[in-house]
Length: 61
View 1 (cartoon, one colour):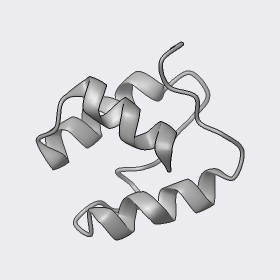
View 2 (cartoon, one colour):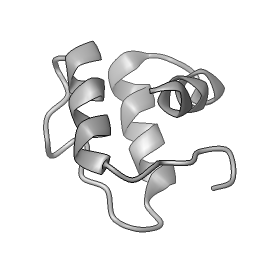
View 3 (cartoon, helix red, strand yellow):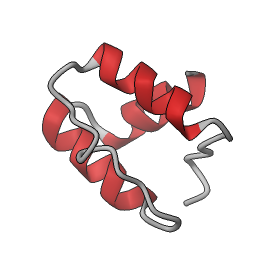
């Protein structure tokens, strides 16, 4: 996934996402290598935001 560049410090990023969207659980944010699309899909379902908007937001965190 070239648009989404999850930096090192996944736990820090996960914490920021959970702060912004308190209804997300650790299970929602489980990420394995190559599962970026699934993570984005889960975030889209939970937040109601579009893919491009979420990619931009994640890259800014």
